[in-house]
Image 1 (cartoon, rainbow, N blue to C red):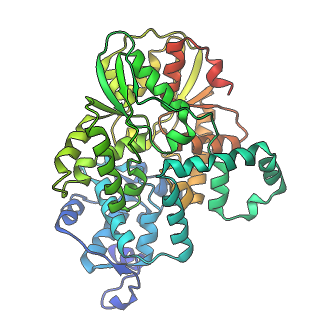
Image 2: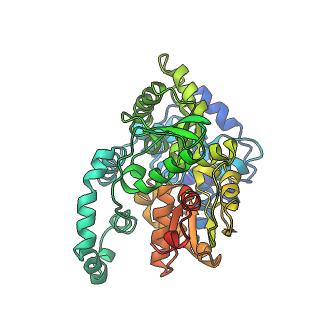
Image 3: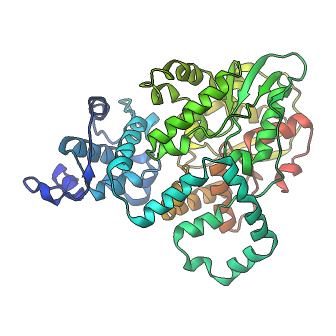
Length: 452
């Protein structure tokens, strides 16, 4: 596509600037420097999920960079440009694929913050986004959803709704919400401190999260047990809340900063050596706190100290090395790289190393494993159709491995792929990486993971 065709695609024509009907776009020197790093070589194209779906230049990283450059130069943000930016999953697969070291993560976050500040969305879009961000970052509000979800399932209403064909008549977003609604497990109230087993090797803080805390409590419990078994005293401050990941990745920067400040305060007072995360998206954002709060004179220093301590749970376990005995688990697992763990944090080897260290366990690689499953935070709610297609592709590749269990490190991925597997009629259970380790350390059979 030529530059002129690109400009026409974005709604701009030389000498006819009045065709711009979008919002104002305020560029910056820092953004210009980031954009200038891109030489438009195209190495990002094969890595980009939306480009693989549609083959459209403007739905590739370099195409979006071109649109952002254009908006920055003209000071105007066309509606068509916003659509292409919204369509980006933010999976960051393009970042390690780029030979020029373009910081696309910073570019898209900056552009999305501009969109949220100045673009007038439709009423329906505004209502959906406000509903999402009034619920997901708040554990107590999520907790209030548990009762209705249990009732929906146990009353038989879910089976009735699915058989009736009613779901197919609902908007795609509501269909996705119903499909990926998390399972309801018994709530576990974890203590603020869990003592190390045997010799104490480290004192670590643990993020309990929002969705993870309320809908995947067994993952948090397993994380605490595994860390304790490996000689860590685990500290979980009761004052902690949302890390701000969902807000940051969708352009709600000020909201993300508020959440970040509160979390920094909670863990700064805890006196921990490391801060462990078992959710890929959360860990990615927490490692960015130094940049997120760099302009805050009060928090810049504490945020940088905080970010330097953040580790994915698999990173820390590999750094410490194993001391607890692993028991045999005769099971084959397909390991899915959560995007914000593999691409954004560069953590690919530690999870595989830990899984491979379990006697009897076989790790199977998923074809096209670096491609996003379509969850991407709340992307599957905001852009349900491409998310569904990516989920179906991922489910097909998972099934092709012949594995008995799908393992990954992010709650959104577990829900998204689990839903796609169910849609395909494939009965492959899912588990978090630490749940597999926990079963091995406890000597529980593989059936406790594969028959649930």
